[in-house]
Image (spheres, rainbow, N blue to C red):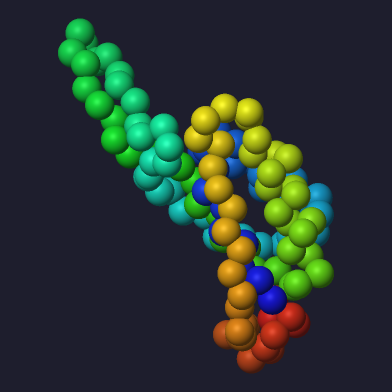
Length: 112
């Protein structure tokens, strides 16, 4: 089992959610986060004054998937989140040792 964590632009969140639903993903966790990468934020103008925005708003999506679904999940995220511009985001894949469904006590792939 794998935990796929994607950091994407917030306005691409609905597209990513729809793409994941199409490949069979039934659940995900989404958090509003802030951060920066190579772009190091940017300068904005507000009421005639310049200020630096160090941390940009992003959406963090976490999806637990079986090993067989990992590639399709990553491809769906890339295709739906990509704008071709700086700051499109990152995807991290980590191993999950065990998963439990609290309600039924199921474990492993059946708990996903």
